[in-house]
Length: 516
Image (cartoon, rainbow, N blue to C red; front, side, top):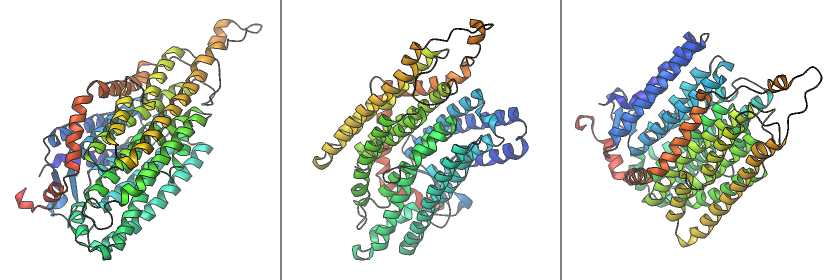
């Protein structure tokens, strides 16, 4: 049995308590351990992606107990992609947090960071819905700690709203699990894929209730209308590196919708095969509109970026709602793009806001390196808005091309195109205020006894290479996605085909231990 599959869960789970209890008073040791662990996690993720590239579904059975009786982790192209995406983003965010000193504003940043990675990787690898709930709770605990990192009244208030909303989602999750287990006698995803279609349609009412509850829970995680309201307040008040890491958090909800509602409640499931698409598509359309109008009306930089994340999730879930291989390929491409684009914007915002009096969109004295920050913001903004030449344009083009059904094309195309236009206007307004109008403000004349050099000395220090490098890396990934769109799309085509191959997934997970 291949033990590499469990390492993305075990490595941060072992590293976090060591950092938390042994290194909490030595920030240098904590940084070294956290960076080393994250680099190793990225190397493991690359190895797992290589293992899964041939289309084989690898199964890890804890204690060598066969499914559905034991706990299983499942590695296929989709889960390998998500673990790789998580580890790459984590390394970029961690470098920024260390170089800007955010990690030193509390003792337990690195321990919580590793626990967060454990929960995210576990959610992507688990083959059991109950263990998906467990990893969701690990995510909730670690993310709450990270969100209130360094304290503050606004941060505590937003953190309370965040945890209350997610605890309500967790409660619904337990209700859904109980209902589903009462109906089928199992919570293993592969076993559910066999048992749900066997239930007669007239007896499947409880299964439909469970499917709806699960959709609501995953919608909370994905910030889908009407339960998206927690995200702007939470992300805009979180520390910028934490908000950047949270760019992958909403993707956990999108992944759960894809995995569960394709494998368990997909074609052949009585009364549930069209349930997700029926409710998901209109909710995604409204989510795009809310995100676009939020960007247009934002008066602070961090909420503006948070609303752009809401809009990007709407675009992603419009493609997911079609539940076809072509649309799923587009959704996965856009998922990778939007994760790095959102993280890049939050990291740039941190560099800008810490050199101003706040994140209010109003002209102030221009900071040193104003041109550099303007260029970085411009590049990240066009990526998020979906303008060429970066991958956002190709991502939205793939989504639009995948949605051609007569009843969907008008709504989807109108929402995405109009939403993109409003997002462009919102980012253009913000950029002009932050970087262009600010240059029109001159430094006031020095008072008696004060020289121009002393007036200039109040300027914040120059951004170091370590502070700018993470943003550059994220932009490089976005550029690479555009340059290598062909090979990436080919891989994602195979990923989508494997996701919709329910028989192959079931056979790999439920096959007897001695045969594998």
